[in-house]
Image (cartoon, rainbow, N blue to C red; front, side):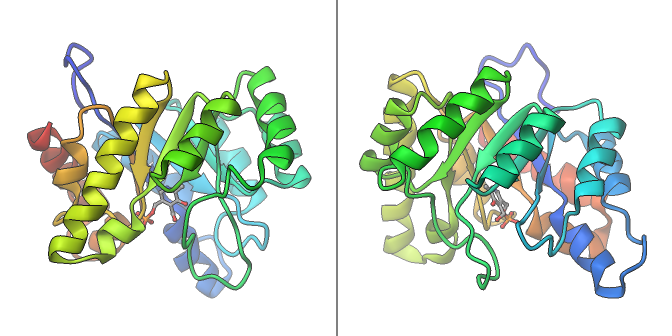
Amino acid sequence: MIPPSHPNPLRLGVNIDHVATIRNARGGPHPDPVRAALNAVAAGADGITAHLREDRRHISDEDIARLMGAITLPLNLEMAATPEMVAIALRTRPHAACIVPERRKERTTEGGLDAAGQFKQLSPMVEALSAASIRVSLFIEADPRQIEAAIRLKAPVVEFHTGAYANAQGAARAVELRRIADGAALAARNGIEPHAGHGLNYDNVAAIAAIPQIRELNIGHFLVGEALFIGLDASIRHMRTIMDAAR
Ligand code: PXP
């Protein structure tokens, strides 16, 4: 963990969804995502992230309740912009709620939320969550139109979808990186705290971690996959080392 005295700390939120994916492959209790969350905390995570999908394909309602009871660090609940999920968040009171787009057939969250296009639908949700002291984050592309919508929605946080950056190579990756860096600067200038996540790994995380305005990265799939080879503790610690060095 970065010491609190660091002039510009970068937090690591560990997403434990795919521990639940493995558990659900057999339908039993093992491996337990709450145990993974506790291990992540011990390895230096600054928060735990979990996505309660509408189809409950990995994290379950019970996992969220158990996480809230077991972890002392902030829980970032990723959720679709639906009345059901808002009601769950208001009941559960996680530290933060990250609103993500969700399509049932997608394998993962394939792009950012259309905060500009869905302004009317999102506005009362952001308001209700904020009124309950839940820190709202919007998972958007680093696109000025979406950032402006987040400003108008009074979201305190945006998380930039780094999937296109992670998938791009060479010059195309540099373009994506520039887009995220510009987006982070625009968000920060307007009082919004920028975060980033999706598809980050040991090879691509440093350039994102070096963007000074970005305050938190949320990383899951790679860390859980790497844990198969080196263990969860080591996979998180190594990610932290790369992030801290880039800072
Ligand atoms: N941030 C958000 C909002 C996500 O929905 C996800 C998962 O898609 C992540 C971060 C983590 O992405 P990954 O599992 O690729 O590290």
